[in-house]
Figure 1 (cartoon, rainbow, N blue to C red):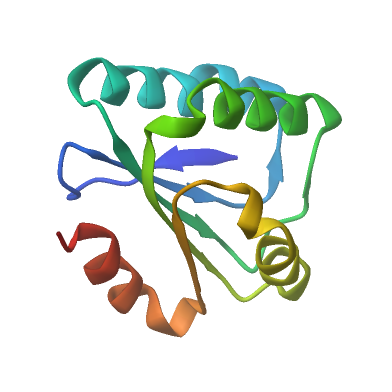
Figure 2 (cartoon, rainbow, N blue to C red):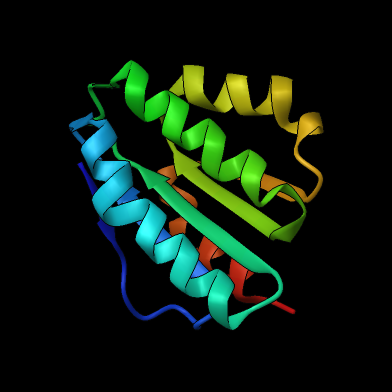
Length: 121
């Protein structure tokens, strides 16, 4: 499940991911929020919190994630990933160089630090 987080500036797409993520989560939650933010801003930021109860992601959701990232590749300004799930942290560190914006990974205990970082000018 993906849910929008509130109390972030308008140029930041803030999401929390938990349980099992489906293609429908991307189509009904993530994509509309990203498209709405891109309609208002040339560049946007992403705050993505992945809970310890994350169970996995459907192949269709992986495809949607890839499409959203690639379609707007040069419009991402900064990305903060907040998680304690090791394989996600390791994957982001291994492939982060492919993302043409600054990406930082924070443990859940530093969620406030991640929030400050993503908001900072």
